[in-house]
Amino acid sequence: MSISKSMKLEELRIEFAKPICICKACPSYPKEGAAFCRAGKSEKEIQKEYCICYRCWVYRSDGLKGEFFCAEGKAREDFWEEIKKKEKDIK
Ligand code: SF4
Ligand code: SF4
Image 1 (cartoon, rainbow, N blue to C red):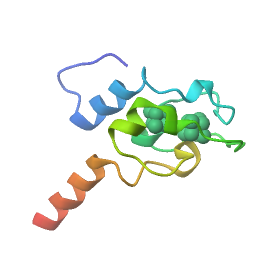
Image 2 (image 1 turned 120 degrees about the vertical axis):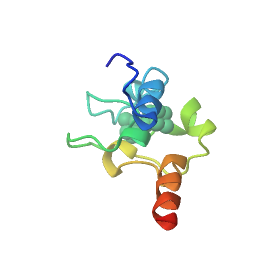
Image 3 (image 1 turned 45 degrees about the horizontal axis):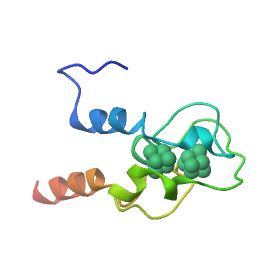
Image 4 (image 1 turned 30 degrees about the vertical axis):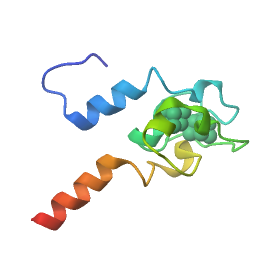
């Protein structure tokens, strides 16, 4: 995806993480997709072997916990999710 002015911040965060994501080097990689911690889980079936997310810069910079985001979805610690929750509380 190319970056355009109309992209939302949330989409930009996902696109920023994709080239940094190390999922392709993981034995559990579902053969497509990236940055599952921010983008959400893969639609492919995951053969869980182990998860190397803890070695990723995004994992460390976002202070993530957990693993297998490709199978289980976005990281709960994702600060973007926290912002959205706070917005709902204000409304
Ligand atoms: S933490 Fe895992 S899913 Fe997120 S960008 Fe890094 S390797 Fe990819
Ligand atoms: S989220 Fe974890 S288990 Fe899934 S492909 Fe990325 S590193 Fe591997």
